[in-house]
Image (cartoon, rainbow, N blue to C red; front, side, top):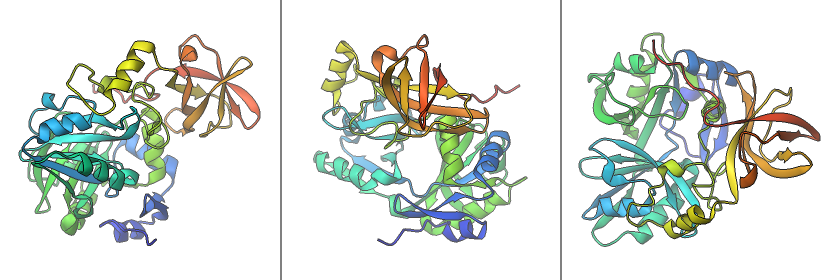
Length: 362
C-alpha cells in the first residue's frame, strides 16, 4: 500500500527528516537527532507535524449525549471551546482509543490516534443514533504542534489574534499567515505549547510562518515525540493500553466518571472498581547502563510480576525509564523491582506520576 503524505511532507524532507513508514504515512523519525530534538523542546521550542492524527466531527440533535455515551469523561462539563482528555471503550471495558474532545459551537471535534482512525470512525458511525452526524475530517485537516517553554511566544509572534492568554485545555479560532486555524493549549510532551489545526490545502503557509518566528522552532521527529511523552508518563495507545486493558488498569481512573450517565463498557469498570483490578500500569526508573525496552520482564524477588510496555533512555534525566504492567498487589512504592535487561536483572525504582515535570514559572 502506498504511504500517505502529509501537507508538510516536502518541507520535512527538505529539512533533512529521516523518513519512515508510520501509521500509513511517510513521517520523519528524526532530523538532527533524537536527543538533540528532545532537549530543544525542553529548553526552547520544537515544531511537530502531527497531521497523521485523525479528526472526527459529531454534530446534530443529541450530539452531546452521544459523545458522552462514547467516552468515559463528562462532556457536559465542557465550556464552549474547552478541550477534554478522555477514552473510548468497547463493551468489555477495553480502550479502543484515547482522545481529545473539543466542544465547538456547532459540533464536537474528536481528535484520535493515527493508527485508529478507521476503527474509531466505524465504531462511532455504526452506533450513532438518528439525527447525529459523524464525519471523518482527517484527510482535509492538517495539524501542527509547537511545544516547549518558548512555544507560545513563537506562535503569538505570527498570529493575528492573542493566543498568549489561552488557558490550559482551552481553544480558540485564530488567524496565522492569513489562514483561519483552531488553536488549543494542549500537547503530548509534558511542556507548555499549542496545537494548531487548519485545512490541508492552506497548511503550508502556517508552517512557514511559524518556522520564521523568533529563534524559530526546531523540527521534531517521531523519536523525540516518543521520548518526550514517555518522560511525562503519557500513555501510548497500542503499547500502554489497548482493547484488552481498561483505563482503570492503565492508571487513567481520573478520566472515568462512573457517576455520569451511561457509556460503553461502564458495567465492566463498575465491577473492576468494586472487585479491584488484577494488574496496574506503573512507572519504573533504572540507573543501569542498558535501557528497558518493551517486552522486558519485571521481577520482584524470584517472581516475574509484569512486563515493560514502553521504555528507553530519558534525555532529561540521563537514565532509563519505563511504563510496565505489574500484578496489582505489587504496584506500590514499597515493592523492590528489577527489570530483566537481556538476562541481567537490575534494580528499578517505582515512580508515581510523571518522570519529568517542567519547572514552575518564576
